[in-house]
Amino acid sequence: MGEAARPGPKPRRLYLRLVRIGDPDRPDLPGKSEVAVFIQNLERVGRLVLHGSLVDPGGDMLVLRAADRSEASRVLRSDPYQRLEGVTYEILPWTPGRLGSGVNLDPPPALGSGRLTVLRRVSVFVRDQAAAVAWYRDILGLTVREADPETSYVEISLGGGTAALSLVAPRADWGEPFHTEAATRVGVPTGIAFETDSVPALELRLRHAGAKVTEPARRQPWGGTTVRFADPDGNEFLAFDRNAASPATPRPMRSGKRL
Image 1: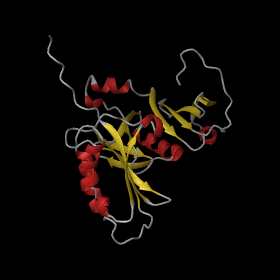
Image 2: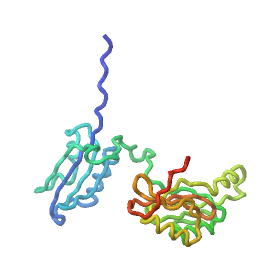
Image 3: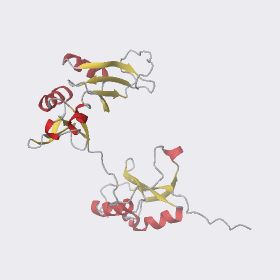
Image 4: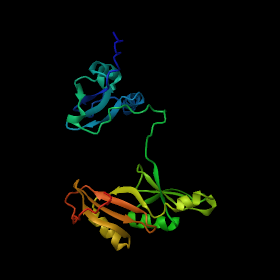
């Protein structure tokens, strides 16, 4: 007889912890720092999926990973909400297909292990950096987030907490092949997409400013509307809105056209 297969590790399931408090001003609620430490510990060991507040009635919720319900209960022993009296405290199985999709069942890398935490910036290559900064500021409404005149480094963004565009003007003193390689990246489709509250209004504003619209507003099969445009150097961007009522005239797809 062959050797019996060893049982593998139990699959990680998702469990929903709900606390319905009712009175948001009761004096025995755990402090924000105490809750933050508990949540950080869950994240550190790769168990936290999401955490947030409940309304009507008020409360707290989190989704965590565990092999089974008993393990979920053990993990939640240090939950500061456990000590509250007169509240509804529930631990329920979470089924992504039924209660919400798009949840990653695989735990992320632990903190401190090279885990990616935020998309910081994307480079866009331009010929004249000062002129580009003025165009992105005046036409698109972006603002300078960081700038270092000594190194000609500049970041522009839509505000705090958002990814920035790093506008890079190739310089001959970089030497070869770096200068030539960078120069070939000026005036190309960037693959960068912005979301807007109105594609038709954005297209009208771009045209009034003399910007090049490379593809007019068009309705997409998923219900939103898109427009493509380019900066003065020919770098192309896409903007979209999610409003199915946006007035856009559908156009037939051309072979090889990007979506």
